[in-house]
Image 1 (cartoon, rainbow, N blue to C red):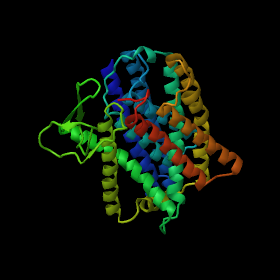
Image 2 (tube, rainbow, N blue to C red):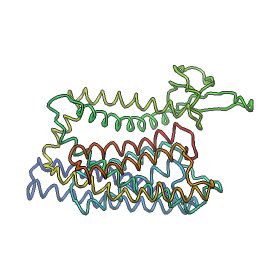
Image 3 (tube, rainbow, N blue to C red):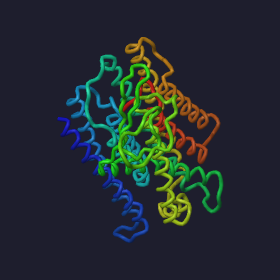
Image 4 (cartoon, rainbow, N blue to C red):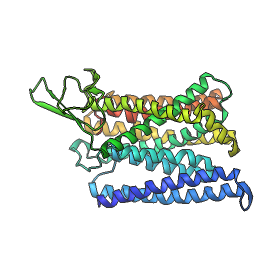
Length: 403
C-alpha cells in the first residue's frame, strides 16, 4: 500500500512539472504566432495546464488516501508527510481560485510551489512510523490538515503577490524595493539549492559521522551528516577519516534532536542559494527581478485583478488557518497535554502568523492598503509561514519538532 502511495506521489509530481511547462507555453504563446492568435493560444495552453494539474492533484489525493490506509494515521506526522500534504493543499487552493480567475500566469507561479514542496519533502525519511499515544487523536488530524489547507490558500496569495511585485516594482533604478525582490528570489533559490545538494550528496553516498558523550548519561551519541560538515554538533568530534574538517561548532543553546546537523543544513542552504543566485545573475548580467519583469511584459497582466486574487486567496485561507492552527490546535493540546496553550516555539510562531494575516486584512479593509503594499504583505506572510515550517521545525526543539 505504501509503495502504491509513493508511486502515486511520483506521478503527481511529474504531472505538476508538465502542467508548469504548459503554463509557461501559454505565456510565451502571446509572443508566438498560431491559430486564433496569441490570446487563443494562451487560453488553450492554460486550460491544458489546468487539466494536467487537476489529474496530478487526483493522483496526490490517491497518495493521501493510500498513505493513510497503509500507515494507519493521517499522513501529516513527519516532515515528508506534512510537506507533501501542504503541496496537496496548495494545488487544491489553486484549482479553486483558477476557476474563478483563469489567469495562466497564476499557474506558472503557483504550481512550482507545490513542485518545490514535494521535492523538499522527499529529502526527509519517507518511512511510516506508528504514532505515540498522545498523538493518536482525531483532533490532531483535524488540526494539522485544516491548518495546511489554510496555508495552501496563503501560498496562492503569495504567488499572486509575487507576480504583482515582479511587474509593478520599477526596475530601471536600484531601490529598497528592488533589493527586497532580489532577497525573496534568493530565499526561494536557497530552498532549491538545499533540495539539489541533498539529492546530489545522497546519490554520491556522502556521509560524515560525529560522536559525543552525553554528560548526563555518559553514553555516546552518534550524528550522521549527509551534507558537507561546516558546523559540527556541540561537544562532538568527527570520527569519519579524511574529508572537510568542520569550521564551527553548533551553539550550546540549540538542543533539538540532531540540532547540529539541521543547523549545518540550514547554513549550507543559504550558502548554496547565494551561489545559485550569483550564477543566475551572472548569466542574466542584470538583476533577476529586472530580467523576469522584461519577460513578463508580454503577459499583459491586469494588476488590479492580480491584486484582487492575492487578497481573495488570503481572505479564504485566514478563517481556515484560524480554525486549524489555533482553535483545533488548542482543543487537541488540551486533550493530549492537559493544557490548551504552552508557548511551544511552533505554537508561538503560528500565533505570530495569525497576527500577521489579521493585520494584513485590517490594513487592506480598513486602511485601504492595496497594490504594492498589499502584495508585499502577501509575500512576507508566506515567508513567515515557511520560516515556521522550515527553520522553527528543524532548528528549535519543541513538541512540534519533526524529522
